[in-house]
Length: 465
Image 1 (cartoon, rainbow, N blue to C red):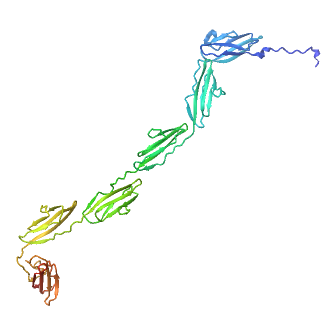
Image 2 (cartoon, rainbow, N blue to C red):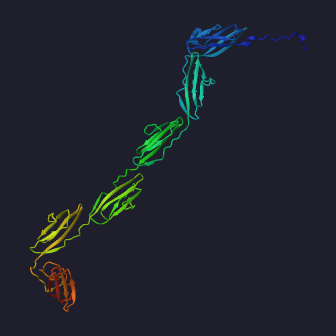
Image 3 (tube, rainbow, N blue to C red):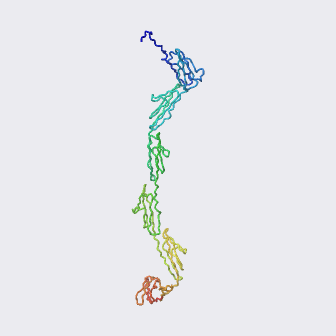
């Protein structure tokens, strides 16, 4: 293009102040102090109109000074405005400033312990404040803790700088296992141990030592806690009963010679050993003596003994008897500790003179009693020997047997012969038993001999039914 037609090209003039837009600056201050304002880069500014955003201050809320000062009536955020004029133009500047009432000491909380993997958010926010943490990198009001260490912060505003420190530790999950339930022997103790490193331990009795000693039956628990949680386990401890050496029966006196079974069974016994080496829980005593039994339990070996006395009672010795009218008869009991007759007598012997039933109860040894009795009859007695010559065995209770009377004392032997001289009956201790009712009638010959004196009686006797 030919510029000659138009003359030289001329660009419009550019207002240089556009490159120098001023900004609001304020000297930081606390509430109650004077705030000082200024315009940064004030070149080309012809005039300025300030509004300090503090209506409560009335007419003092505005100013036209380039470097005004203002005393705020209230603390907090303020919207400051400055209208600047330059080269027949204007620009409105706005900025929020914060008038702090005072600096507040930040609180990071007490030293604490976290579980591995947890985080802790530390928040120290204060309006209008700046922050510096221990790492000199983070300038936020919030810091997130992810690992153990010592953490501090400095918080500053126009009123000053205050700080706080916190120590953060990290725990790992723990475990707690007590032994299985158990049974102890009398006098035994059980030591329970827990590795409490990294946690707080509490036993059922409120103690906290790493070791707990059990001395009596019961249920015991341990509780282990840290920042990751709590763990509890328990154990029940029983005690076996004390086995005393008196489980056998008491010493026994028996009024018999029959064998006696000793029952030595004991619920705590694992094995038995008697004095003869036998191993059953029972033992049969056949003679008087001392018997012992040793039992082995889960805890110990215990021995007990028993004295067995077997007493043979006397056999009955009284026999029914007949005495002559007017005679007396002496009854003598076996030797014993005491006697009691039905007559009221308490002596070993009594003398009787009349018919009746007589019995005695005597204590042969301590605790053993024996009784005996007899019937005593009376009859008319012959002073001289009388031997019947006829018997009638017809069961009419008259002359049924051959009964000699008035013989001297002694044991007699009776021999009976038939008429041909054949021996048909003989009894060395004759007690009036002959003849048998089946014997044929007839005449028989007898020979009666006293075996002590040798004196004899002989004759005949007729049997007639």
